[in-house]
Image (tube, rainbow, N blue to C red; front, top):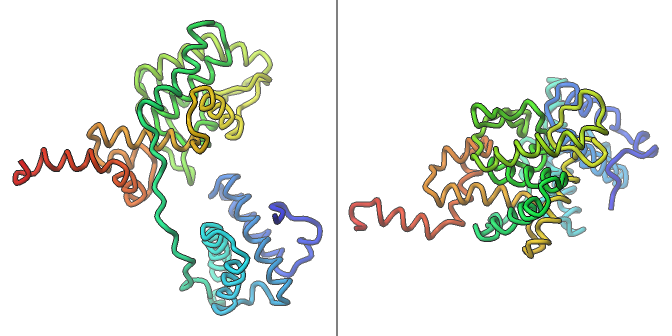
Length: 317
């Protein structure tokens, strides 16, 4: 496995200064999240190492050389998704370099990566979602002062109730939620902000956490800490820490191992469509920039869509 952070040898590679400059301007402009920035750094370093092994100048590249890079990754049995991601990162930097120097051509502009098979989201059944949400609810019923259960239940209810990405949940602060308006302000991909309604039970669960749970956790927090979800040490919970909360509840509920927090987001979308929500509204709630991304959910609710067709089309009565 290749290192994701630059090691001393990487800094001596031809082209490293350009990679560092490109990543620096992305970071300065806050155009990508820290996770995306780390992924791009890893992808670009992998390309520099490959070019060095091939004794090629990495930035004076050609369309043919880029195809050779893809072919080498294919022979090494890299996943097509990895190949596409690396190519996308490289395209971004080469495009930036051509913008800095108008005489420079962008050899990657017409190059496409390997076609990916369409993967459908895992669809958690409503009974599975209920089982997941019941785990911490039972712990709270047994001990209303269980701070950890109060926090974990609030997190799970918010992810399912608002269709949050795990990184979005980790980014929530005390001012993100409007109890008066019944909404949550979410900072999504590309720093795009959206406002999502929150169902009453999730708001009630969150209020209990804020009243009886978070103040206890905040005793160990730094003064003025605004993160919504705090660890037992009073620190903001990372996406990885919240992922562990999900996994713990998943195991306690006896759900399949392959489920992830993102599948709870999928359940949010699927349940809305099954309940009659229109695709455009679901797109807005999920924060998808393209409707085609949301349309994948129509493939996992075929019975419901067929029923809507039979009910709505005049010739299908």
